[in-house]
Amino acid sequence: MISIKNLHKKFGDLEVLKGIDADVQKGQAIVVIGPSGSGKTTFLRCLNTLETPTSGSVTIDEQTVDFSKSLSKKQIMAFRKQSAMVFQHYNLFPHMTALENVMEGPITVQKQDKKLARKKAEQLLTKVGLGEKINEYPFQLSGGQQQRVGIARALALEPKVMLFDEPTSALDPELVGEVLQVMKDLAAEGMTMVVVTHEMRFAKGVADEVLFMDEGRIIERGKPEDIFNHPKEERTQRFLNLIQKTDII
Amino acid sequence: MERLVDIAQSSFLPLIEATIQFTLPLSIISFIFGLVLAILTALARISTVKIFQIIARVYVSIIRGTPLLVQLFILFYGLPTLGITIDPFPAAVIGFSLNVGAYASEVIRAAILSIPKGQWEAADTIGMSYTQSLRRVILPQASRVSLPPLSNTFISLIKDTSLASLILVTEMFRVAQQIAATNYEFLLLYGQAALLYWVICFALSLVQGRLENRFDRYVSR
Image: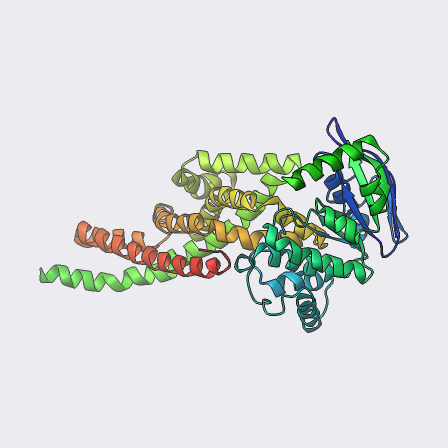
């Protein structure tokens, strides 16, 4: 479904991604972990061209974009349509209700029929457990509810791939579960997902594969039980040790 | 005393007429043109295209750096030297629009910049184009932020239209001057004019309050 080849990203002189190669099969949930500054968020943002990679290529569902060449806006827009993003800080549109947030993409961008879009948006919000809250504005919702609206907004675009950028990092601890549950359900339905997260339980329980990133490279990848129980690389071991220590505290 | 009441009564109608015929249309038309110009200027200022930035900067600098009255005089009394003759009312509209455009562009620019970057990104990821992002996401939020300062601009504009009397637009203040010139009751006529300006501005501040309430429905208080 996704194939990433030799992806590089530079911000000025700083090289944040130093050649990423990865493949994601259809229906897989991939979790990317790594210390802060490892480039995992930049990597995810490159898949949606929120950051334009400096070089390398990304293929999503047989549509390949080579970032070494100059790309037209049209090409970028077409490529972007393949995936949808869920943000750490939700980034809901504050001047729209939950329903309007979810309908916005289908109506404004995809020019869908309003009634149809509304019906679909209601279904999606019900699916994420917010059927009662469709007419609330974001400020009237808790963080967990806002993030679930964010997920519904992304799903409304009917993307082939869902990208999650630390979707629970800004949440109060007691609200993390409701968001993870929605993501878990999505994975079970066979949605192709790339998730950047610090939630190791989610990685262990839901991921088909875990990528460990550090200093702009993928250091190690494998099944969650292998990565968490017997990591091969020294850096992976160190990172997991640090995390487990803080878990005890 | 009776004479004063008579004068006040008989001058009231012409003053109102001039307000409806000239002061209000001049204010409203100039404000609308000015706002469009302001949005374009603000977008030019924040665009990544150097030449747009420069044009916008020069325009704002010229308008803000010279007196409004001088701008109006150049348009009405100066341009005929170059063979360009503009009637009083259109000359005033051009002058005031250019003025509002420059001042309001700074308000709008600040308002646009105050919208978090995440809003642009969210619009991007749902596939919106630049214009769609602006129209659906950024400007609706920016207009809430810029409502109080833009109301200020509008209120200033209404009072500034009195300057149009000096380029022969028979707006309300010019009519007051004309009447006062016949009966020498300067205090009375200018007082009436002042009162009328105040009433218009007061009504406008009520509208502003209502609009603010409307906009605030989506923010926590």
